[in-house]
Length: 395
Image 1 (cartoon, helix red, strand yellow):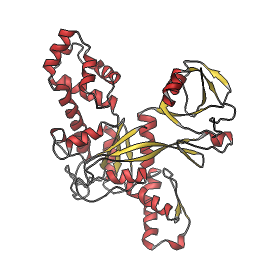
Image 2 (cartoon, rainbow, N blue to C red):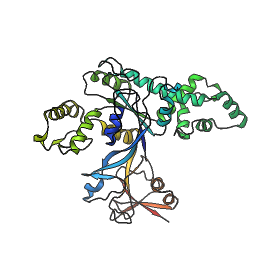
Image 3 (tube, rainbow, N blue to C red):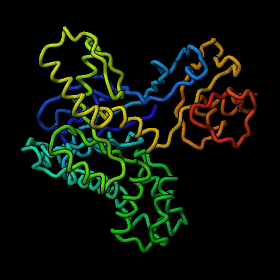
């Protein structure tokens, strides 16, 4: 299952984002290091299910379907808060960074209102510049990875030369356990001096920065976006960083709880909600819902929480959703379940790669694939498209 790490300094709403994205309940408090051990829970990305288009009632097995929206599970990791100097072991730095490397993508939650200082302590609204948090986060991870690469680097250079080893493979071995692939390293080296024996500290740091951007893409969640001081900060952040989603995690939590109580009808990610029991709303609840509607939903088109998850998986990781079936005529598995599984797979993948994702044995016995919608065989180099219904034929 794909993993997303939810990162950030203490007290920016990181755990609130995690809770709202997974509907879980981890401890939330107004002081640093509330989160000490990494919490893990299941969230979902949302994609259009083919059931509506095909006028079918699906029977999801590995996911869920709500009103034609397929909810596909992913795992979120809420890791310990990061403070400056983490790469040197300050705070819970080493643990944080170890936990962080488990994930394929990083969601960095910041306080867009600027009401928490560099250590995560509350300050007056607008007193801290959240751009500083983004810079220090990237710097901490880069310097931590650089420390791993730089460890015994002179000795490694001599070994590479003496044994005629591939420098990319040596770097890959140095970074084992971080989830960084050999392909990531090869790509990251392209803009670095080709003669590795001439690399100095600046070259190694630049290489590390390239590796991080390729191997662990980062999405910025600008939380507390409803507060007045957030507006200008979000504009500045978007000018400098490409992937920024304004959010209000507290608003999402409030809407989820109101929906669970039967007071409103709300589907996570929607830009509106429907009040079901207006007479049962207290004055405070009614005012809160009005505030959320005016300052979050109408302003940003949603609370941003579900948008962040979807953008992380479908845009930054460039994934699509494919529906494997056994019977391409009825769109079922061997038990008769209609559109049983929704599989997240890299855009550009071919049917044989899908077969391996389903199961190694299926990949090894792969013969060809059939497009369920068109009821015709597809070529071996066919690039799967989002929403494809594919039957894998094996030997």
